[in-house]
Image (cartoon, rainbow, N blue to C red; front, side, top):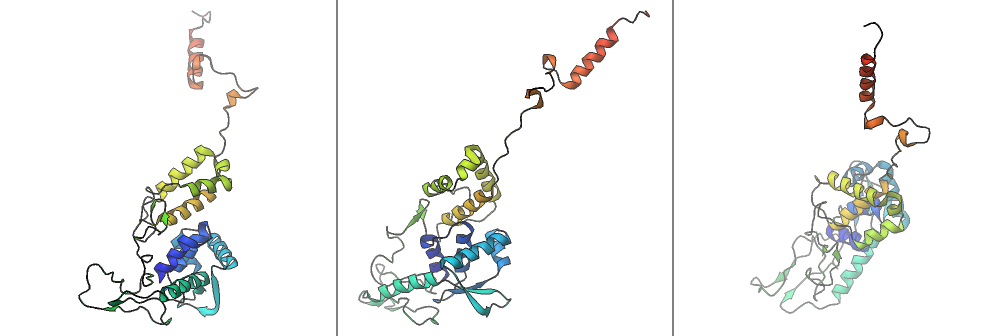
Length: 280
């Protein structure tokens, strides 16, 4: 169930930045078709690599948008807060209902997600000598598999692509492999980050982000994109370089011959020693 909920977040959620990352982390903990999971602010801070204020603001935004609902009066084993993902539940329930209306192919009965909520996984019933041309659904209920039709095929061309790669959980990339796409460039201009940082500052921030994330494990491209945007939002604009004091009006006169201050002092001392004193 966590796979379906996580895919919904990357493909359909309207949240951005830290809020999108927090929603994906909560969705990753869903274990049944009710799409309810518990999480604590410290755990979300650690997994999202975000501050306490950022995580709390993200939870407030998600609850206000309706993508997340806090279940009052219910706590986890260590006092964690329970959350419900109503939009995920509604969307996937509709997908399951649509799959129920499509007849299964003859010779095999492929289960759908239309069973009771307490059912952790549907079982597959068919001939033991299933031919190579028939698809056997993954056991364990780890993926969303409506029956019938080619739309449920993960290799179907209608499956959304993220950053030029497949959006399935198998398409994991490193931070160095992640590329800035057109949507991210539009976001940079629309939110004013390009004007704030400038081309040079943006390149420096990108290089610093890739350096800090080099030790992280592979992730989906959408996860890297959300983390990269959060990094850019927190990046400070570069401080303009102050001119040298000698270049300012009224500043000290430049040293002759391009000598340093120490060299000028040494030259003056040697010249004083060479002057006649009348005592020779």
